[in-house]
Length: 394
Image (cartoon, rainbow, N blue to C red; front, top):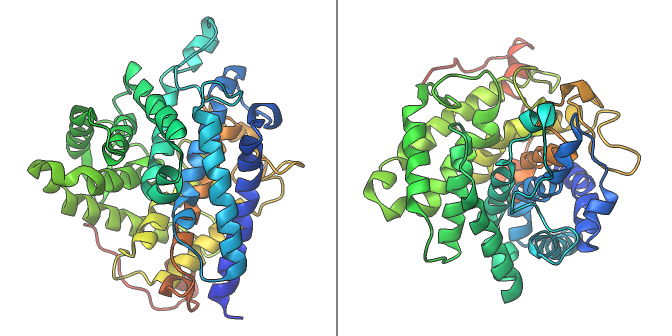
């Protein structure tokens, strides 16, 4: 069995380990009952369930969307697609015990708890859920019945009740509106999209890197959120206005460059720099690299196989670390195991499922070049004394 096939089987096994507890609990409408909530502040319980489903689905959506050629994998895909639709029903149905916090309902908060809780948080995870729908419109929208579609649109529209922060959060509001456009909702709001696109143009700092707001942040938010959402927003609505369309080439070129930076940051051992916020998202730090591999738009300096091998090493070091899951299969806070000290005040169990974005290339067929051959990644070659291409800024 070739290494690419072995890696795909491994990726599928880990992806299913991540997804199974969340989706089966939601299908039974028992997520709030079953999922433990690890968090620094207890108030995160009001957001964590919507976080879990939105972040998980945005990572596995491309795999759900494309029928698999291998029979056993196809049976798995169909099962998870059905579970995902049941999860969307459970999280968007106001009568469901697992109804998500789309209405920003919170108990009265005072003091430190109030300061630590941003009631705009549902915008974030409604956007990740929206992103999942854009990535799998057949399985996660068209196959929903009319009742669930209506509930979902109402839930997404409810996000207009709060404004996002002046940061990458602008893209969350824009992503929701782009999805409403894709779903055929007549009153989608072009201004929220326009503002997010124009602000990020102003916040571009060079060499494929955007500020998170006007200033640079040394973290992985260019990969967690900024590049992937900019790409899929512009691909969805870019043709609606010429000035949006004009941004497409720049957005893709910058994303391609930042994907190179990400690949070069993966050490020979599959580790990466422990810098910035939200390290508990683990392999989600490589959302953009996985996204560019899925789109088959990697820079010419990167072979698809070397990206697969690099990401496989990352998956093993993060999701394969002892303590990454609790005894019941739920993710724990940490990077290289269970490290609760790495959880910021906005981190809780549901937040951690952004790690699933590393699995985007499972949306490529098994015969795709990404899943063929074996190739060392840049740092592995460089530190072994093997020839590597010189790096160039954009």
